[in-house]
Length: 236
Image: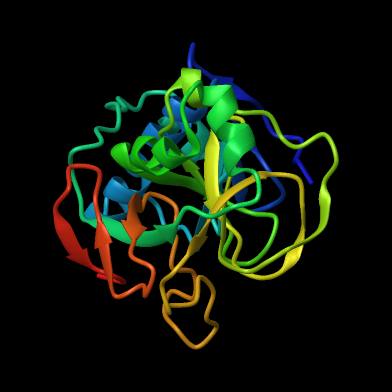
């Protein structure tokens, strides 16, 4: 629940207390949200941020929880210089995929290519986990250029299998478990690592800020081929 404290804003972000110890920062778009989230993590690691127990990014928001004085932090956030996020820094998590999804032909038609070209186009881009939601371990990955955005299915499926690689709007995703869903299914993850494992720290394989590349897996799933034709071990 949003608290009754003052709202502090700049041209690109607005911060308002949320409850007694929360601060909700609203951003204009995914790019500003990713940049602000990265800046929060940088300042937190550097010790220049007041104590914060949780940092939760959304599509256009970042929630900071466990803040001793949300109103003071809101005023400080207004003065932050936040550099844009670059896609050429940080490790890249490779996810091998068999491009065998039931919506592959439909997506190919929307892209104006043949079904056998979808994997190369999808794997050409580097993605970043913008935020998590919907189900534990479900990461919303940005990185597709606008001309490759596709609509959700007009009729959602009652069951999407675990490991399905999917597209909807500007996002790519991998379903961590079987659930209903309305995204376009283009492939199947062929990686033995679970996307969500409560015994792992952190439990989600796809954490906000993680850079991801999808690589085309061989039939046996033991190797994969990147968009530039180089070889990589599946699950590396």
